[in-house]
Image 1 (cartoon, rainbow, N blue to C red):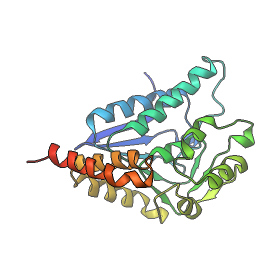
Image 2: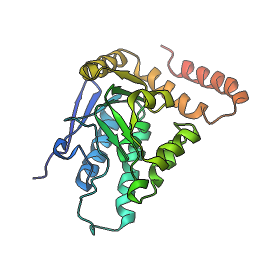
Image 3: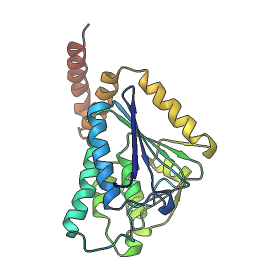
Length: 236
């Protein structure tokens, strides 16, 4: 019987997805990535909201650098990471991350792909790949959607740890709260979202995704079309 590395509970269309390798800082090995992908696929069908959190003192240290090499090709390993990233980004509802302690490497990519990220005031973020001799291509594929280029390249090339307040200032996370209030704040926000019309939440997310790629002059017409379509589809 395989070890449960991802705990998934779904109730009232809310999925709580919890990373469960606290003894290694919730670092992702192949088994954990596989379970994460399965959990996201189930949530895509059965939930409108996902709360992503980690057990223990850290959210996640990223990829497990101590996992034995030689299982499959590098392409297959990276493809599994890409599948997880794609499933998280493609979730049609709202994904909220609750981040405590360290969020390094791959975990920063997870936080970026969540719609809302609430972090404890002692949380720290880092892209440590370059310091380890690895170009973080899979993170760089997404990072410019979230951070200004000079912030992004500084984070990538320096591998320095970034405190929660700086991460919020650069746009990596949404809110910073006292560490003791992280879970209650995240749970309260999810409960607030659950009280909203899920179709409205999904429409807002879709518009943010499409609207940010349009020239400023085209956004007014685009919003007019989308607002009209939504109203026509959801008339009672």
